[in-house]
Amino acid sequence: MKEKNPWHTPVTIIITVIGVIAIVALVTVAVLQNRPLPQKYKYGIVLDAGSSHTALYIYEWPAEKDNNTGRVEQTYSCKVKGPGISSYASAPLKAGESLSVCMQEAKQRVPGRRHSQTPLYLGATAGMRLLNSENSSASDKVFQAVEEALQKFPFSFQGARILSGQEEGAFGWITVNYLDDRLKQGLETKGALDLGGASTQISFVSDNYDGSESPDNAVTFRLYGNDYNLYTHSFLCYGKDQALRMTLAQQTQSGPGTINDPCFHPGYTESRNYSVLYDSPCVSDRKPQGPPANFTHIGTGDFQQCQEVVKRIFNSTHCKYSQCSFNGVFQPLLQGPFGAFSAYYFVMNFLNLTDTSIPLEAVREKLGHYCATPWNQLKQQHPKVKLKYLSEYCFSGTYILTLLTEVYNFTSENYPNIKFIREIKGSDAGWTLGYMLNLTNMIPAEAPDSPPLPHAGYVSIVTVIAILLLVLFILSLRPLWPLCSKRPQIV
Image 1 (tube, helix red, strand yellow):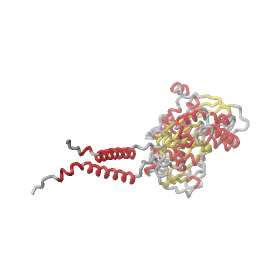
Image 2: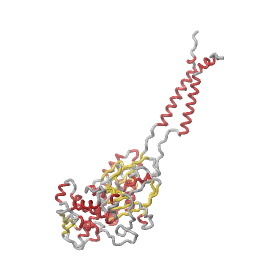
Image 3: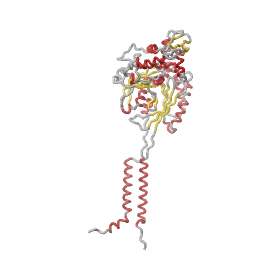
Image 4: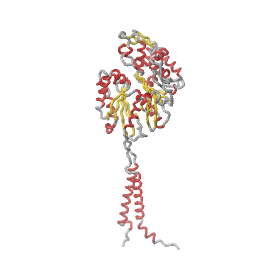
């Protein structure tokens, strides 16, 4: 009779089947527990409604946050065609319509499943501040038209409002320091210099300023677990476009038919309308009585004389504080490095003067040479630049240098501390990123995706399966037990 194979018994087969199942279960649990977890992202949209144009920015950040502050990155920007929304005061519906192209882009860029959870904000700056002060009813109608247009999109619209100058300056400061990783790492912060068309802002942390002197200029932020006491001030009407109006208003006080302007190039001649020039709250109260309809604007191209003209729009004669910048506004001593953006960058970049290692005297010489360049020669050198913009670079460059050195008191020693920037790490420098970063503190963080099992449960299951496999292995050796027991013992 053939001897029965002990490995083919039912018990052995059952042990083998259970062992295979246990091994498959162990591998499955390990794979599921240790697979990469998908990163959740949130999105935010901010519309920057400036005085000269509107821009849309899309921001993205992980749903899990660092020290209560989301790590925000700009993923897309769209410049709205046409002027700023404040220009549509007489046709407010067009203000809302102008945003539709960029909003459709945003609809495509943000994942559809996130549309309803994506906050949408519109912040208006100096252009709407001026319109609101001049005609609040027109300002309200523009906002109403904008809100109605934005509410048609599937995002979570959070409203449209005018940012105060203090907010604009403070959020610009956050942007510059966030992009440089200074906030997260607790490094010395950078000051922020922002220049728009209708206003300019200066913001920085000073060891000499605790907010007790001129408390209206003090802002406190808590970001990444650190507190920051910030000095900030916004000068309405001192953006480059309104500053140009003020210098022209100074030169046309008597209502002349012709002015010779040192801030425009030799050979430049343009007929300007008095009503258009004085159609701004920044200069409307200075309009001369009974002027002609137009005046002839003639350029003479003299940098030094231009600087004298520019200085006259700043009032530095009175200060009730320990120290002031201009117009009686308190300013502590400048401290640390500064980032200068918006029109600061675009003007100085065009003039090839963004390298602040160039001595100040050399900068003045270069500006002097540029302003003295004949208008016809300049047009030939820059055929693709719009004539309006091209004609104003001499004034804008002179204005920027005068503002920095004669008003904010940057000297040849600390002027190199300024860095002219357009963007850092793919994000545009400006107030919108700081605004979004601050607002993420108000957005609840989602719980991150977690493994299927808690760590203790995972360890327990793996341990039980491992013990089971060991027992099964020992039992599988059962046919060999008799052989081991029959071995002769050596005496």
